[in-house]
Length: 130
Ligand SMILES: [Zn+2]
Image 1: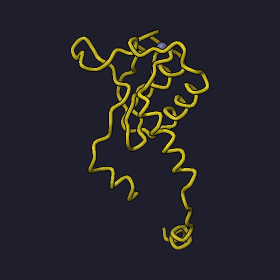
Image 2 (image 1 turned 90 degrees about the horizontal axis):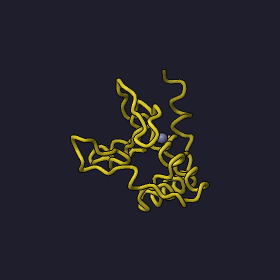
Image 3 (image 1 turned 90 degrees about the vertical axis):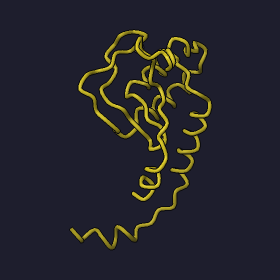
Image 4 (image 1 turned 30 degrees about the vertical axis):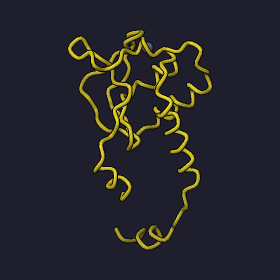
């Protein structure tokens, strides 16, 4: 909880949002396709993206810009980045490459989760206080 509160003061980076005819300042996923991107790394990145926490739900579904499949109705987040639910599809099925800095971020987040020190004292004190 305190970690999320700390994050409330800084902006969350948008990732994987695409330009529209009305706003061409955002990238086109077709320009980011890397057909040679290693499949196991794509699966690793897509898995991380698909495990994001729901940040917002939208009324309508998004369609993939590359194959037109229905591709999600929500935005997901890890508290540092926010991305459309379908970004994992772009990565896994189309090889849309994300910035190297984001891949380093994934490594660091997973490493930090792996090394976290667990403390049961709060749970022991509060479990019966309902
Ligand atoms: Zn697609």
